[in-house]
Image 1 (cartoon, rainbow, N blue to C red):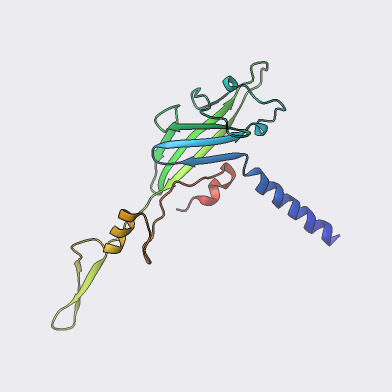
Image 2: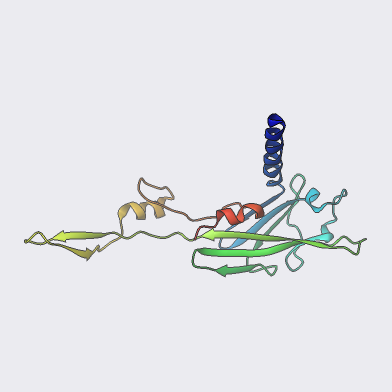
Length: 177
């Protein structure tokens, strides 16, 4: 009895992990890329290119191995980009309208870019009496400037900028306020 319960839980975990690769979302401040496996649409036949579109009727830009790929600027296709306190939220939808059916469907798409903040240092200066006063530093830390210029992250520097590939089911777990 206990073994069958463990096996059932493992099967549910495997199924939830397996489903994450059906929709792949990647974004930046300039573009949105969505890959959708055509089997996700619930139809046993591969949809025609005219039946599947992003936002306001933008066709797939590619069809890599079992996927339909949509790669567009966030200023196209009715893609919405909203600046929030924590970053930028990008939203759209994949729409499926089979030509020989009265039924249609859509898949909401969301992606976010978390803001990257620069940490500025100020130096405490002690006067003759031993009292510390805070004086703003005249320049930013050289370690942070190095991180921005070289694309590397020296020890102690932190960068939390995107883009990140996110599946719709993981979006709520990825947002930190």
